[in-house]
Image: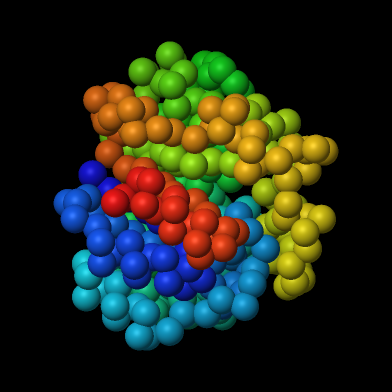
Length: 261
């Protein structure tokens, strides 16, 4: 059993507090997009940098660190990206990504990392799952250690054909159900990082007019309750992902408490 939780360097206060209270036995990793690396995706780059004090604290607690290199466009010669790969190359750490060339590069040169296929790469798959999507999942199973599925696929009947032991399921996804702009939106965010642009609410915030994720995500069943987690465990799921880097510390502490404490 493992949890991957957001905000390794941007939400340290609630994470440190949660780690001091956590009495479970699950393996924990924390993740973030740092140092304005152009490989980052999922969110537009902020002024978030690593520091050795925080890194050493996590390691002292047996907590791994994952980097969100989920940009679909990757320049393998990028200096910052390669520096970060060197810095965090350690057993128990992970890279979240979607780019094939980066995956092959890391497998060859940085074999200690676990590789996680990001949900941001799932935007072209059908809902519900079709034959072609099953083939995509089977391929991902063969080349990645973990796969983050689209929420809409989590309880899809055809997912019984897949290896759920490789799944890392988001428990508090705030995206709209069956979002038709999912792939387009994440690629636009990644493009901002490629260009080195600063934060833009117009690009990063939800593109669906009138959608309020703070209210409607729960109505649309995009959050997973504890009973759902138990059901997924019974189906073979061994890893769960808590998002929330965009939240304030108090609200995020509530999310961590809900799932970890």
